Image (cartoon, rainbow, N blue to C red; front, side, top):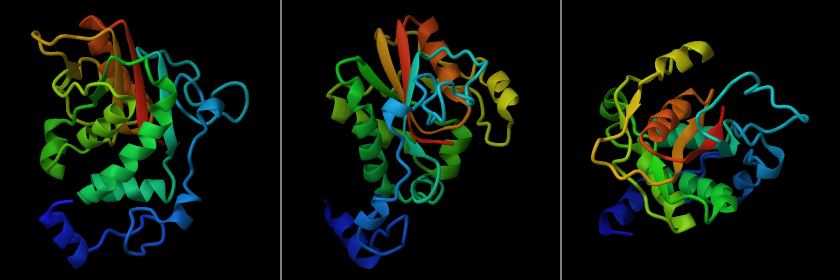
Length: 224
């Protein structure tokens, strides 16, 4: 930890996303209540927790990515950590969220050639002031001991927070591109903070597969 980080912790210590106590991004007591998703009891296609044999979240949908993993459900205290990190620019939550997703992706060790962060739109980057997904992808890449491909995907369409399920899928057609001079690996793991409908991941996977990727899997910190 650098001098600036130490001073920041002294002046304004990070607070638990669950109870608000200073000292840790998620204290042990709140960590025990985190709504994590068991990969063995989740939909292999969209990462949602399964209530029965069939997944109601992605029924009738076709994705360009082959599999999905989500570390937990978008509920407190995990949802608060995501909000603090992404919308309040509290970057000290990156290590918590990155570590949770890296642990969830451990079952895919040996599969991906690279980890790629889902790139933010220009509007989102200007609004937040930083690339919030990049740091999470760095933790996942380090955990799986593979490279992180930082410039493999480029967002060319604006974000879609206000759109419904069907509109999201229509909006992501052509939303991402791969630079012409990019070397596209065969197996790519794309990472984001939240998976809602899978539409954004689907758009990214389509672009990567069109550029030569054989298989694309996706991973998100939380499943909405």
